[in-house]
Length: 201
Image (cartoon, rainbow, N blue to C red):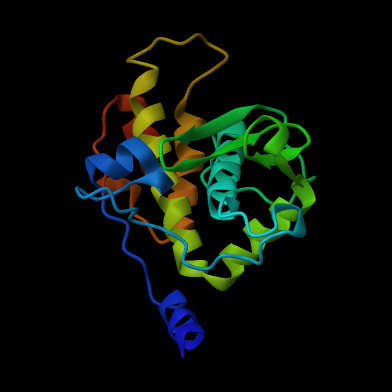
């Protein structure tokens, strides 16, 4: 019955409010009590490399964050290309597993206890999570679109920027992604003239 409930809930629309938390944190936004607004409930099977390690969910969350950061002008999580990552990111702390993402894959644990899950396995798990819960995936992407529009819509200031470049196409592309995800970028605070032009066009 639990799996049936999960599948039923996965098909229900997930609202993406335009709030300071969403504009600040995107897919990782939380409510006032610290609960994630767009959390995945489905957890793919733990890779054998981790055994019974409880860090698999944290590993997937960090991997998604790292992959989004590698393409910071795109809202939809890109999992269609080569299964690799060219940066470095880590997280951890009291009560949380230590997780790092780098070239070989995602590692859980510290020093000699580190366990590696390579990127092809991580990509497969991220795809599975999005396929099982498409509405959560859509909401996370839309929240990222709103976050990026809010950031890029103000960061370049009023201009001028030079005759060969303008931020309008970047805003236009993100606004198009937001609309395709069921959002309305016109509801966002319009910080600059170039943001208004990009959202409108």
